[in-house]
Image 1 (cartoon, rainbow, N blue to C red):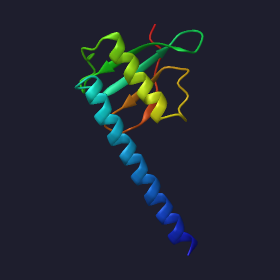
Image 2: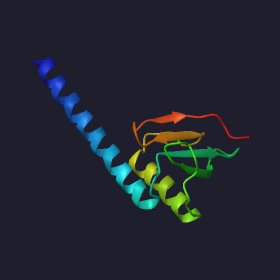
Image 3: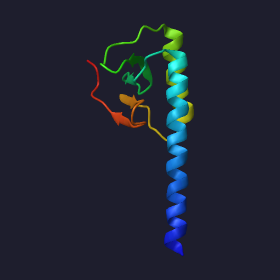
Length: 104
């Protein structure tokens, strides 16, 4: 019985993650169409200093400062467990946040 419960919990968790990823993808596309990745770069104080919205080829998406702030705010709200103090990249395709090299 515990295996069945564990399996159900895993299925629910996976469904929530897929739903969250779909919500983030849809909202990022509304903020800046064509966004496939959001890269954050932190300053020395650990706070995000700039955000890059990139397309599937890694090229910057045409977006203004408000759109960049909106994308970053969206990720901070919907992924509260992520430590955004360092450089990170969120992939729309996978829903994964990875640590990235700091931009010099």
